[in-house]
Amino acid sequence: MELATLIFTTTTFALLANLIIAVYGIFMDKSLLKKVIALAIFSDTLAVFAILIGFRVPQTPGFPKPPIYPSAPETVEEINKFILQSVDPVPQAFVITAIVINLAIFSLLTGFVIQHYKHFGSMNISLVEKEEIVDEVY
Amino acid sequence: MVTTNTRKVMLIFMPLGVIITSLITVVIAGGIGFPPHRDLRDLGKAFIANSYNIWNKTLTSYSLNVVSAIIWDYRGVDTLLETAVLFAAVTGLAAIFRNVKEMFLGEYRGLSTIVKISAKLIVILTAIASISIVVCGHLTPGGGFQGGSTLAAITTLIIVAYSIEAMYRKKITLGKILKLRYSAFAILLLVAITPVAYGLFSQVKTYYLQNSVKEDSWFSMPTSFFGTPLGGSIFFFNLVEYIVVASSIAFIVMLLSMRLRELGLED
Image (cartoon, rainbow over the protein chains, first blue to last red):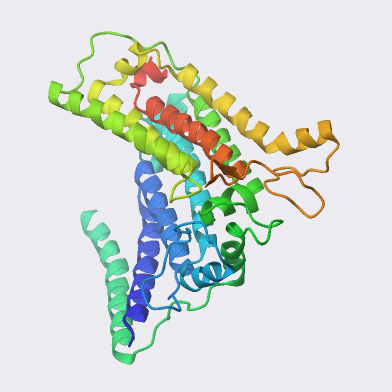
């Protein structure tokens, strides 16, 4: 079996396991802040997954190259040769968009968590279900 | 309580571990698995072929960094709206903590002298590195968002080494950072409508977010600077996005490192 296939498959399974652990954290953990951290792990795993999908084995000997020209191509042949070596740039562009949006979401979520802490004096999500505590606060 | 929790964790993680281990064993022993691609997808191939292609002047963007070309040229509207999402989220954060009180500028200590001096050195180095990441964002790995996050790391470093009062003594307040962010976002929109404005005044057909020459429009943003590829509008977008992202993250870091009393959360 090829080494590239082995590493690729193992990484895929590891990322899937990471996704399951993150989903477990999002649903089962009582602490709001830990839920946010689990969500961050979930989204970062998805980002690595997207990068993994963009990976390819180059058709010329050597390692795959990042989608950045080392210098301005002077002939059409240089461009055609680079297409045989470079990895897919589209997932990378998507991931940087996703990272910026994640940053926005997590900063807002952290603000909400701090507000929750102010109202209930605890990060515990199950306090929201108990009405009497809510009545005391308001 | 502890036992049920432990049992629950065991119930979930034991099968998961068994499944992963067996899958990996099967993959190694049986020689199956997902092989990585050998061919590039057509979309990615088209982007790489046209990113810096002086023989196809209507589709190229004169950017050596293909990812930057996709972000700011081929999918420019996407990235503009993504910046708008970040803008809206930070505005929402400012709305949640709208009761921020005046910072009490008492005595501030920070960490020891060794930490402070080395922090100064690192701040200068980080600032230079972030500028180089942004200015060469269309030539080497980098771009506006990457450089902006690097610059925002300075805020964290100063707050840790010197305390947040030091920022306020240098007259760097939350309101000023917000104003900087608003004006940078306005400039970002201005760069986006520059081709349209040029077209209105000179009666040339131009498009929104246009970068290079199109089939029915000869308008083009500057493509080279003293022989160095400039990537047209990509360079300017990177510069402005740098300020937007750096001020946004600096705002988030400063707001979340304030004390509860100053945030207006404690009576």
